[in-house]
Image 1 (cartoon, rainbow, N blue to C red):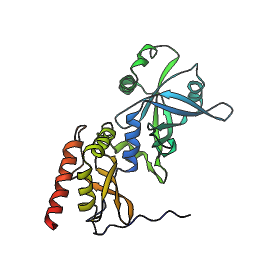
Image 2 (image 1 turned 90 degrees about the vertical axis):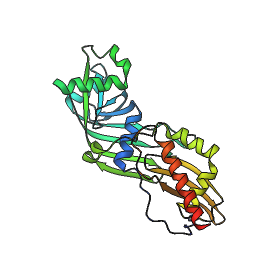
Image 3 (image 1 turned 30 degrees about the vertical axis):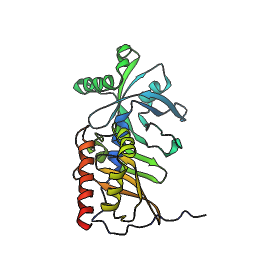
Image 4 (image 1 turned 45 degrees about the horizontal axis):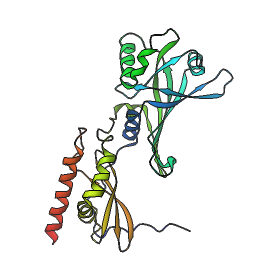
Length: 264
């Protein structure tokens, strides 16, 4: 049985609200974690998956500290092709509806100042690595990213290239977004309803709930007599600081109230 299409807005909105690009989504997931699955190629040609910790350089390149006692540490010197799978923390529902990223490329051992920077990046993300990083069997590797595949959940996925991935920035509000979403739903459902009615064009909305927040805006689900619909409302400007969600959301609520007052 086909799922009914969500009802359209009753009033046309000015433009489609901006979303994070696939490169930004990938950088955000990679920046938020330090544990991943590394895939290398064994001597017999079989793919070999290993759980590893990592840090990242400013361009998002993963930095690994691998022992030659482990199979992956012996595989890379022979065949430097590798991929890294990083998964976002799953929610309460189906874990496959959570975000994840696959980075594929070629690993190499950095030298000189690049080695120092890579070591510092790994230690910043994995402080415990200081206990073994100096051992003779451990080597610092950097994955030179060549292909990127982002999956945001069911029906949300895209690929991007190495240049876009390196140029993108992790979302500065990713860490605080879950709390902000919960707070909006618990204490500001009236403001969310105003946004759905005024900014998303669902003038007949009877309720609204926030389902996500990022540097560009909020994702909502509005309830109307015609059914439910997912909508997106955009902040006045992208957020550039980690604590910027509150002020951006307050501005959004005030803008919605002002628009509703104009038509009242």
